[in-house]
Image (tube, rainbow, N blue to C red; front, side, top):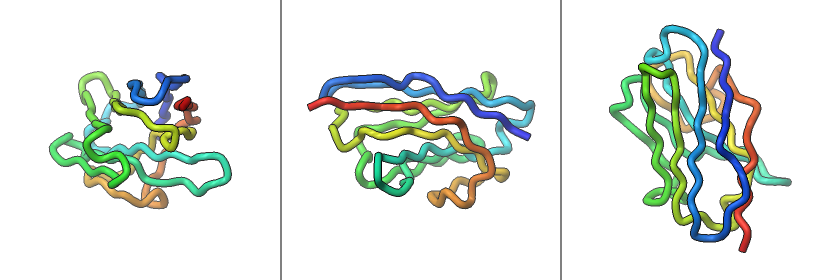
Length: 124
């Protein structure tokens, strides 16, 4: 069982930056691909970014490519999402997710573990 706890959300102005962090329990963190998803009010959850267990391959949604960067530290059991050039449409609850396999996915239903979410609000 893996437990995920996100932190780092908050309120930021358009063009600003935030860094989300997700801390995972367990001793085999490198065996899990990790992802970030988000859900805006009244909308379905959507993929943001994911990273393989080794950290060697990363995937991004087109809407965040070039602005967001996913990274992980397997020694510290953490995965981060650096978000730059934030836009009001980035406003959402952001969720960290873990997959019971080292290869990443862009589909939320392929992830087995989820954090509680952290709110990101970008004001215009």
